[in-house]
Length: 205
Image (cartoon, rainbow, N blue to C red):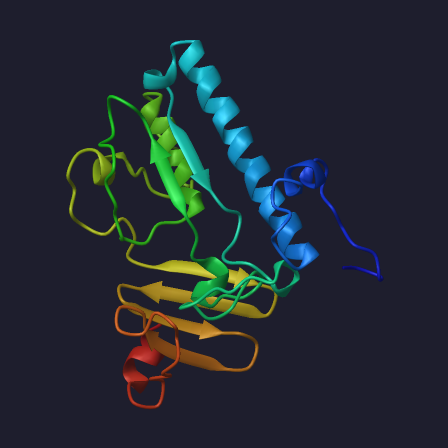
């Protein structure tokens, strides 16, 4: 709600009708939005198949930010934070890639990447070389050619006064109230601040 008015995205209402038993209303609307998204993706993929270009098309599916906000009455466990944060709950998101005949199906890769990698990857798929100044990494060697290294030495985020950096399993976050240090591999919920026990790593990040 903004200014006391409920915001209902276009077409969400008709999809929300599929979920009469979902409560409260905002949650039902959100379910409708997801159903609409699913239908839209299905329409696009079906068209690619009908045109017989599915195996020659690189498809990315991802969110523009991390998990849900209070408006959708959703939970983000085990992650902490939500949209607008630089905690894992604000930046970690589904990222799905399909290129039939080139990329392996059903494979999961837990190495950190970022949406900036899409353009260099798409250029490489088209046989083009990305300009040197372009941020991001061509992911094809990692997901298609067996490169086992990490695509990124470090990743950075900034949202207003909030910022974060991740290097390997380590992450520094500042939500505008001071730097904190977490080991993401051992503490995905970012509950234990290690800044006081590992000042050298804090300084490095």
